[in-house]
Length: 197
Length: 70
Image (tube, rainbow over all chains, first blue to last red; front, side, top):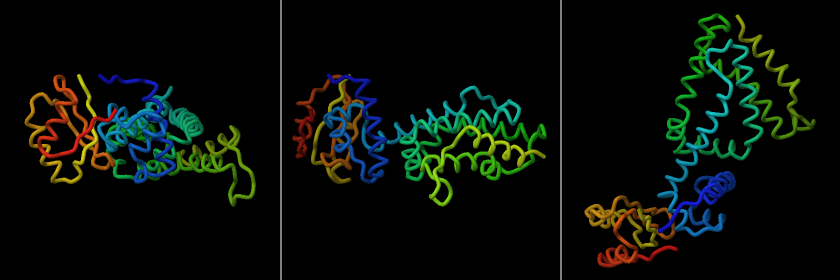
């Protein structure tokens, strides 16, 4: 009888992420993956029924990890500025530590699997974040805005700065850029200013 | 519980429907799936009682190629 091996499972997950980033979903195949992991195709099929099953499971696991990382020491009932600062801290830490996972996550999000994976893993996160936004509006800590405008102002600047950081280059690509704590704080203060009534 | 893995020539939807009739009817097979995207059209069977040879015989009896993947 075949048994599961935790180390092999971890290797499979790692290589899957790596290969999806490198070859895209179309170019990703179970037999190539088995070869990369140095395991037999049969072993791979012990863990997963097929390619679709594997992508869905790994994508959902990634989403759940993202969800947990983003809620570390956070509560939707926090005062707005404290809660948002926590979100910035958690999100930038997560983004900086998991560049491979993020690249894979973005590919999956834009694929046929996107809806399934988000529904399986991020529904609860969405609810918590909606509660956080509505609470802040009710307490008149921020101006009433739609979810989309809120996201663009509250998180857009952070993700843009992280993108510059990842490239290591500032606007125009000619000067070096590093996201320091000071720069992040500067942007954060402006975000709070923009959203404060 | 046994997970048995085979390379087959069950390539088309029609072939899949054919094997579905006898795999679904077999009470010793708890679950089965086939990955037709894979070059080996990998058949995956979960069963408590059946062994690999019995599955191979079953597929061969219905004129399909089937070989256990190690």
